[in-house]
Image 1 (cartoon, helix red, strand yellow):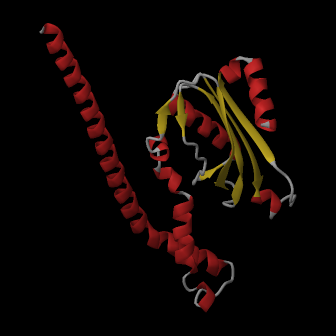
Image 2 (cartoon, rainbow, N blue to C red; image 1 turned 180 degrees about the horizontal axis):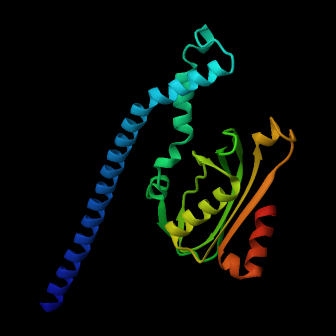
Image 3 (tube, rainbow, N blue to C red; image 1 turned 30 degrees about the vertical axis):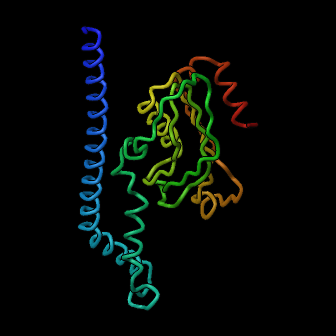
Length: 222
């Protein structure tokens, strides 16, 4: 009889835990929806000032902002800039969107050729390329590295690695970015085929040369 009662109590505890998980997930979804609405309202309120700034820039460049081709350009540019910098309003949780799953796998996992693009904070022109990520942990996560904010590649590489470290708590994380910078292609040195490679190693990848070498070898030839 006591055994049956204990089983019932344990079942109740499990059911309550599952219910709590559902409630927490729903609360999280509601919170994200509320935050999205708030951010959209903030963007809308700031849009006229950004549009006016673009109008002023075009006029100072000698353009006629009243000609047909430019009538709505300041507004379109303002909306584009808000979209291209929306990363300022996003957190790691927003990007991952609960896409983390437990897996009984404690070996190296490499994800290659993740598309990346961002805006150079020095000249406000794009840089874009591919990201390679490697983690050692008991979980799986959907990888996404579209970074919509003003940045530089060196800092961006570290931010991606730190974000993964914060979200997954892995034994190690390694991130390599190879990108082309329009500030070097369209202006400055004007080198069409130049690429910049940056890396960040954390955990065992920083501490263990063999693990780091294995990652670099596999990521280049896998």
